[in-house]
Image 1 (cartoon, rainbow, N blue to C red):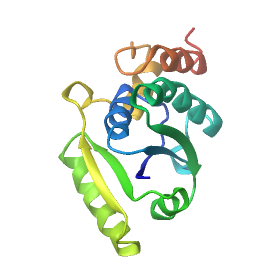
Image 2 (cartoon, helix red, strand yellow):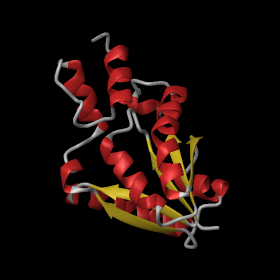
Image 3 (cartoon, rainbow, N blue to C red):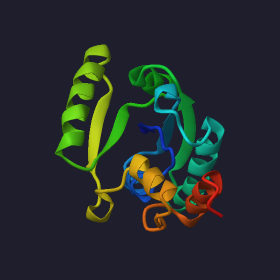
Length: 165
């Protein structure tokens, strides 16, 4: 069984993330969405809320593609998480050259730690290249409409969390 790990903070999950998940899911038998516990980022949503949002967004995708898609929280090294879930592949989405520079360094470090795990980059769809969870939260905090960047369910959760409903 070919398993891939797509890691991120997903605070919140955006349409850009969903697009990468959809595209990655047709490449593997099992896709694990690694939900990073990154206390330094000060997430808006709790880990449990982020996992629930991911599971909600991925249930239909899993049915459509026939790929098992599961959310898996992690706080350890990415490469250790990949081993833990049995992933042979790490999937990363790229929006711009600046993403590539950071990811290039990460691939080098991960390969030094375990050369048997490959990293695959998927370019963001043109319509999603500007989307970043950080920007979505900032726009929503300032009363901007983020409905074009997240699903209706995530939009509702975001507005509720920010007291905008």
